Amino acid sequence: IQRKDFILQTKVVRSKDRTEFEKNYKATWDHVSKLGYIDLFAFHVISKESDVKAVLQEKNGIYEFIKEQQAKGNIKHIGFSTHGTAECILECISSNKFDYVNIHHHYFGDYHASGTTDTYGG
Image (cartoon, rainbow, N blue to C red; front, side):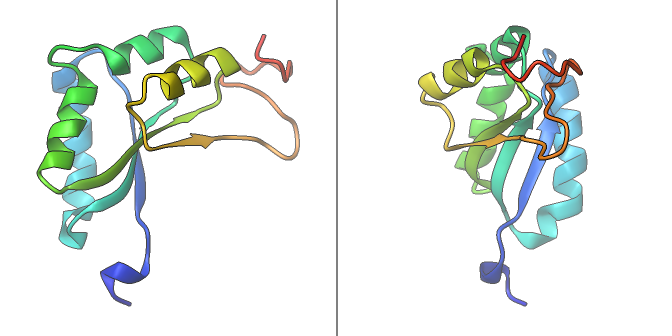
């Protein structure tokens, strides 16, 4: 199989601390770097307002770090994964900073990251 024949997605849990996030990203990159690039990179579990803020902070933030990786050619597309509310999802989408969203829906037993069975995000 050739690299062009598959799409690689990976996710890294967001962090408020750029240094910690870079360490986690590097651990992932060390495992996949021999493949040349990541097709789809997602900030994992952006499900609460505090997660959105942590990812989208402007100066020296984790989004900026991932954009730097994209500029180096290590990442093709930037997205986020979520179990969150419609409000959080729409805030991320409205920022125009993401190429895709990975929304998790469980066929058996719908729930959100908080564990609630309320399918309306409450």
